[in-house]
Amino acid sequence: MAKWHDVWLVPLVLLLPVVAWWGIPRIPPQRQLPVEAVLGGTRYEPTRLPFERRSLSDPADARPFIAHVQVLDFDDDGRADVLVCDAKQNCIKLLSASTGGTWSERILAADLAAPAHATVLDVDGDGDRDLVVSLLGDILPNDGVIGRVVWLENTASGFETHTLLDDVRRVADCQAGDLDGDGDIDLAVAVFGYARGQVLWLENRGDGRYRDHELLNAPGTIHVPIADYDGDGDLDIAAIVSQEDEELWAFENLGGGEFRSRRLWFTINDDLGSAGLVADDLDQDGDIDLLLPAGDNLEVAHAHPQGYHGCLWFENRGNWQFDMRRISDLGTTYACAVADLDADGDRDVVLVSLVNNWTNPENASVVWLENDGQQNFTPWQIDKQPTHRVTVAVGDLDGDGRPDVVTGGLHLNGPFDRVGGVVAWFQKQGQVSP
Image (cartoon, rainbow, N blue to C red; front, side, top):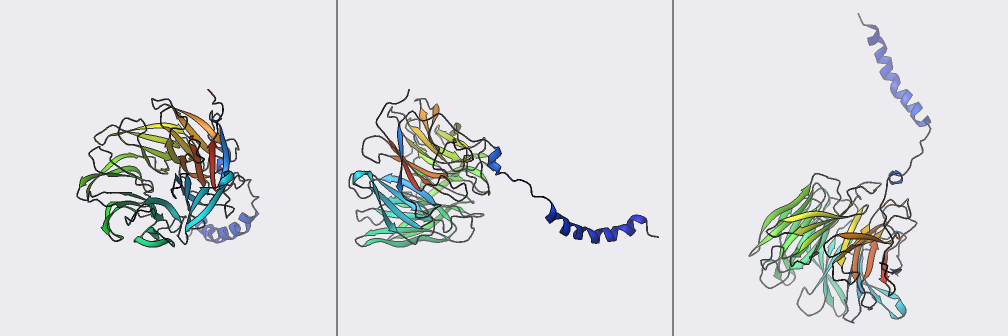
C-alpha cells in the first residue's frame, strides 16, 4: 500500500516546473552594481615630476585596441618615433614627430590579424630595419591554430610580408638573438594560445627559413625576453606562463642549440594575473633581473583590482637564483617599463593599469616608482586618465633630453568615458617637487 508522501510526490514533481515557468519572470529585478563599484582601487600622490598629457594619434575606432608601443628612431632621422601594434585596425603603425609638436601616422603593414608585438631587426642582413611581428590571430580567447610569426621585409616599395611560423596557436611575443652561437639571429617565441600553448625557439636556417624547437608545452606564455641571465657569455631565454599555472621559467643555453629548462618561481595563487615580463638590471649590479607586472583579469567579464596586484621584482642573485620582492601595488597592473625618469642615476619603473576601479575617477592609470638607489620605491601618480592602459614605453619623444612616457589603451570593457589610443606624457622643464 502506497504511503501518503508517495501519492503526493508525483503531482508535486509535475507541478514544480510549471510554477517556476510562471513565477521566476515575475520576481522583481534586483539593482545590479558593477563588481568593481564596491571594491577599492589604487591612487597615489600626484607626480613630483611635471608631465603634460598629449594624444599622439586619434583612434580610428571609438574603442581602440593598442597591443604594444615602443620608442625608437626607426627612420634614422635623429628623432624618436613610436612603433604601434594596433589590434583593432590589424596593422603596424609608425608615429613620427612633425613640426609644431604634431605627430603624423604611417601604416607600415596592414592585414595582420591582431598583432601583439613587433621586434625590430635586420632579418636578411641588407642593412635596413625589418620587423618580425607576433600575431595573435584574435585578440579574444581562442584555442584555434590562428597564430603566426611574420617577417616584414623592408624593401624600396614598402614592407613585404613573409610567414616565418604558422600552424600554431595565438602568438603573443617574439624576441631575437643568436641562440645557438652560429653568428645569425634566431628567435624565441611565446605561443600563448588559450588552453594550449608553447615556448619555442626558431633556428635560423638562412634565406628566411626557420626550424622550430619546443622548449615548453604550457598555455599562456606572454613574453620571452632574451638575455645572458647566468653571465656565461651566451643568450638564455626567460618566460612568464600565466594561463593554467602562474610560473616563471628560464631556459639555460648549454650551447649548440641545447637548453636546460628551469622553473624559477611559481605561486599557488592561480588568479595572480601575470601580465608580462621585462628584463632589466634594476639594481645595476651587473646582472639581469626580471620585472613582472601582475593584474591581468581579462578572462573575467568584470575585471577589478585585487590586493595582490602590482609589480614583482625578481633580483638575480646568481647561479639561477632569483629573489622575488613586491615593489608596488596597483590594481590590475598590466605593463611596466624601466628608465631613469628623474635623472638621478637610478632605475625607476613606470606602471600602467587595465581596470583600476574606474568608477572612482581619482584612481591611477599611470604610475611611476621612484627608486631611492637602494631599490626602495616611492609611487607617484602621473595620471588618472585615459583608462585601460595595457602597454607602456619610455623615451625622449621631443628631443629635450628628458624621458617621456607613452602608453596604449585596450578598451574591451567599459566604462568608455576616458578612452585613449596612443597617449604620451611629455616631461616638462620646471620646478620638481621635493
